[in-house]
Amino acid sequence: MLLNNGTELTYRVRAHPRARNVRLVISHRHGLVVTIPRWFARGRIPEVLERKRNWIERALSRLPAKPEPYRLPERITLAAIGEEWNVTYAQGEYGRPNLIQQAERELFVCMADERTEAVRKLLERWLKAQARRHLVPWLVHTAAELGYELNGVQVRAQRTLWGSCSRRNAISLNARLLLLPPDLVRYIFIHELVHIRHPNHSHRFWQAVAAHVPDYRDRLKQLRHRMESLPV
Image (tube, rainbow, N blue to C red):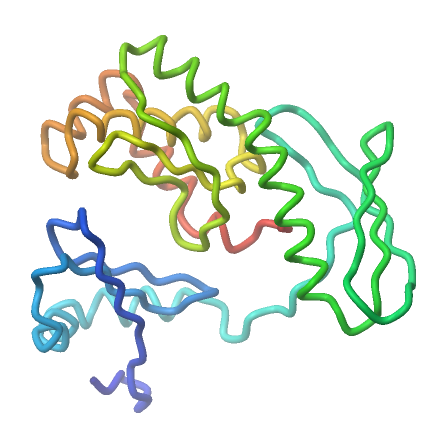
């Protein structure tokens, strides 16, 4: 499909076992991602995109023209739990970067100049460890508080999802939730817990969400494109 500016639309296709409908997501980092049910014929995707042409054009026009290069953070704020960590970098020999967690919320990273992406992955692993320590018991407590029965919790570092709930009632959390304010984290928890009883985004699902978070639409707006600006 050609866009109005004459360029060919590019996109990624993601088949999801729990998807009921085709879903389009446009982000600064990934561009257009088309999520489809496993039974959906991929040959019908161009037809869907053509119907959504105007929305796609508007959404793409709101994205920055050129992504900014990633910069290693000097500070990581875990807003969800009210912690702030300073990060110090030091020049080291070639090889894998090394991270040391010091007292007083200090992280020390020894790295080579050209290993920025490797350091980013290292910080991501540290964030996942913190998330397992803080987010998992928080979710378990929230499930018990609201009367939902969990069947396991995993922590990952997804680039497009804040969380997901499997058919077996196991919830996967994005470690980057630690970088969000507590009210947004709680909303994500509730969103995924409600999926235990409503494994879709039906009217009943949103009614159940609204019973716990009446202003959930505001939370959704706050989460839009939020992942793209996070330091880790």
